[in-house]
Every structure is written in structure tokens, then in C-alpha cells.
Length: 158
Image 1 (cartoon, one colour):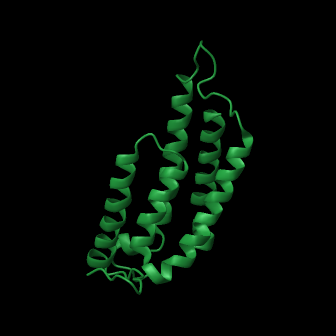
Image 2 (cartoon, one colour):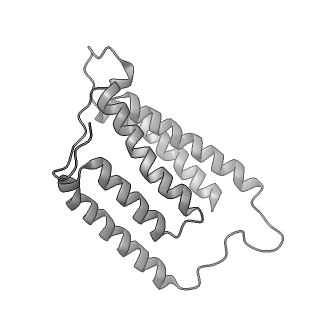
């Protein structure tokens, strides 16, 4: 399974790098800071996708176990469908709450809700990341890159 996911990630990254980004993402020629270019982050994400694909393929080499499959089979497929519906509901709620609460606070809550929906093995790390990552991204984009981050009606960040 990891080999198939790795190949899929590499193919998706190649599609993005060779076709999608050059043809569908436009960038003005007068962008002075490369980090602020509309092309920079899509290429970074595509490269990271390829990197993860290669990592999945390498990790699949050592994932075979003589004791049986690495991941046990799913016992109740209905739980997976229920989680999928819950994830779709979480996406809708996130979309609806974002104008009222703001992007930073909404993403914190959505991250925590998703972490507990998928039953993470590291709940403390998930909560810490849910708070720290949106705040760091807000600080970078709002104060370093001077990009406006949508603020909510309830709480405004400096």
C-alpha cells in the first residue's frame, strides 16, 4: 500500500510541477521577493509531495513483517464511513464559522477536532500544534510578508 501511495504522490507532484503550476498559476513579473511570488509555494508543496512519495516508497521496503500485515484489517467498515461523514461535516462547519471566528481561531479548532476524530495517538502534541502552527503562520504572513489574514468578528489578532 505504501508503494502505491508513494507512486501516486510522485505522479501527482510531477503533474503539478510539469503541467498544472506552469499553466494554471499566473505570476506578475515584477515580484521582488521570491517568497511572495504566487509560484513559490505551489512549487514548494509539489516538491514536498514528491519527497513524501519517495519517503513512502523507501519506508515500504522495511514495512513487511513476518508476523502478518503491518496494519490490521478494518473490523467495522461502517465506522470509516461515519468518520468520513463527520469529516465532511467538520469541513462545512469550518467554512461556515470562519467569517465569524476568523481563519486563525477556526483552524485551531478544526485541527483539534480532526485530531480527535481520527483518534490520534499523540493528543498533547496535536493540541500544541493546533495552537502553535496557526499562530506562527499568522505572525509570518501578517507581520513579515504583510499579507492580510481574514480576521473574525469575535476576536481580532494584533
